[in-house]
Amino acid sequence: MRRGIALAVVGGLCALVTPASAQQNQDPFGGQFGAWEIALPPKDAGEDLARMSDALAKLPQQRPGVVDTYVLSVSLWNEPVFENEAREAAKVLARRYDAAERTIVLSAGRGQGAARTFPSFSPNNFNAALGRIGKLADPNEDLVIVFITSHGSPDGNVVAQESGRLMGGIRAPHLRSSLQQAGIKTKLVLVSACFAGNYILPFSNDDTVILTAAAADKTSFGCEPSRDWTYFGDAMFNHALRGGESIMDAFSMARGIITKWEDDLHAQWAAKPASQRAREQEPQPSNPQQNAGDRALAVIAKAESYGQSIACAAHLSFALDRVRTGRPLKGLTDTASITSAQSAAQTRATAEGLPRGRSSQDTAKAIASASASTLQLYPAQPADVTELATRCMAP
Image (tube, rainbow, N blue to C red; front, top):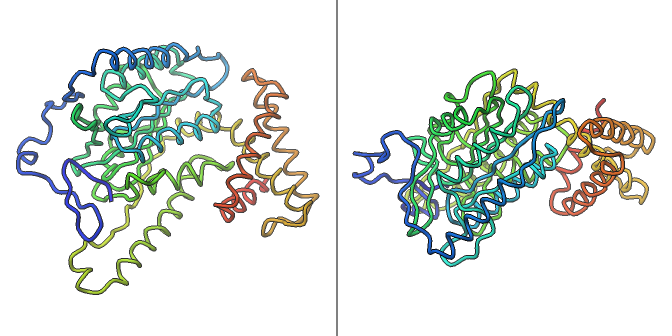
């Protein structure tokens, strides 16, 4: 279970507790976006500034006539699970939305003493990234994706912490205000944290799709530092978005995966002796939430069509290879049907890629790379790969 400002360990689960001082003053910044921060040592500060400057300088201009996507993926808490999730989610989003050159990752790090790979999270760096993206993107044409992952608190704060150096957070009004000030219009916002449902209402408008790991009054799971993903990140990015389905179909698939995992977690709790259950908090469903604006959905459909076609061509290439080698995926045994669907997906990908400046050779390489990733993914997720390939068979 995710942590908030303070924690108590109850029966092996993290239970959120709120100190009396925090109850009296839950927002020391008076509604403003900020953090308590101790300066980095001069050498570290210089290196961090260089990483941030380089990340901003590399962002290219948008291409008129193409729905370009800019991605900002952010880890706010300095534990490995959150940096892992921000990094890998950025890779999945970059492939899906053809945004490899237009992606920035910010991180609170992996803990004291750990080497840094990405620019640090701070309110200034976060707003600088949005400001640069807003300057480059066309608000009437392009899409901006913001993904944040951390622990959350019941008052809707997605908490930022870098042990001994920084403490703050991002609330829904902070993010909404920063996006507005940056001139960003169409957006896909994903929040992986406890109580993330507090973001739903502030982002319920025609220009936004908002997806959260939990309801406003629910915790989410999988935040142990040793994990590669939280439950939400794993289900959404590592499973559902690797295929060719739309963003909302991917979210629906992710909800189903999370439900299964949480049911298993509850069954484990229920199987314990009554005396032990009495000392532990009963796991409750996280109930991931969504709201999708119609205009945002239309822009997202255009933005993800190239990546969807590549993903389907890759999954069907893998399915075709399995048939030819006598090891077909369950329910995918008709060579002619798979070949036809794979050819159609490749044709769509090539046609979608040309306006983006991607040659047919570029698209073929992207499909080959995605197919290789599917091969690596299959041993760990055979049912998912089979389901995603089956979905790609639909016209």
